[in-house]
Image (cartoon, rainbow, N blue to C red; front, side, top):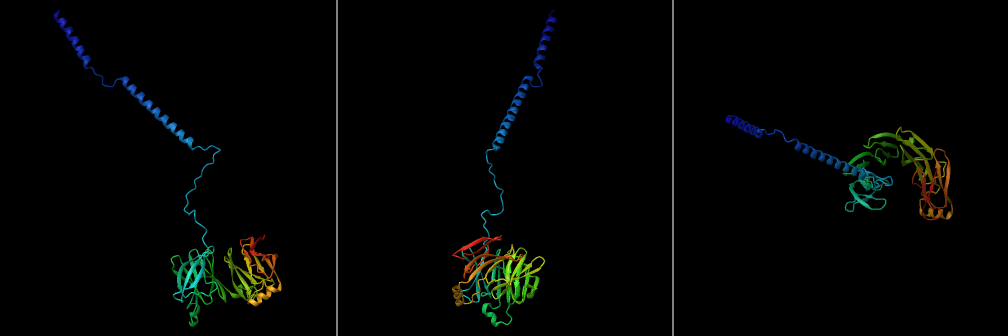
Length: 354
């Protein structure tokens, strides 16, 4: 009996010991579920916050139909304050310290301001068209010995030089009695002498040569030729008898074709202007005056002066205005607008020419 009780007691003790040593190896199921719930709530809240923020940004980017959108311009490399390039003219003056040298100035046609550019030697100062300035480049005529020194040099010559923005000089052409013009884009240089007309490229090499008889409309009535104007792919030369217009010549700069216009039958005097786009010439019959007495006598004559536009292709004439012994000094402002002196007062008038 005692042994039986002892066995029961031992069995109960073992059972208790087994219960106390049976620890679980994983977290309780309830705690695991709570953690998952918390994480899920946080994810939902994060998604909601992101969605609300995105909707706010989207709505703030919307422009209602009644609003005018503000357009920010694309950045450009050009200077927005950049103005139209100044078409400088060139002024040459004797150097006050050395009369054999010449001071070169650039003149603003609007303000009249002269800015010193460079000092050079042997410049042909007395030439009526001794220099041009294009895109930072100076073109100028050198003459051996200058205006007077050449007279003692039997081998004197005229030379066309170009000075770049760094004031570095390059001789382009050499000939006695040189006259020149440079196209605005500097691709062509026209050289005029008494004997021939030459076209050069930008480096001074000859492209084409015309003899004087090839660029004269009427050798008897138009013995002299000179540069008149650049046009669209053409060069215009004038033919004159003394100072009065007697003919025109058009040279194509692409195929070098020559067209001559004999104007010796028109009552054109020394004042005229060509419209290179419409190929029309504006002129008057105001005569050339060579001294003060002739001018005064003409003013007393009460002669009529007519301003006329002549179409070189249709050969039609249109009288624009009439004055009494007064110049018109015509000038084309554009392809349709002619400007001239007011025949009945002071100032200038303009007229549209179809």
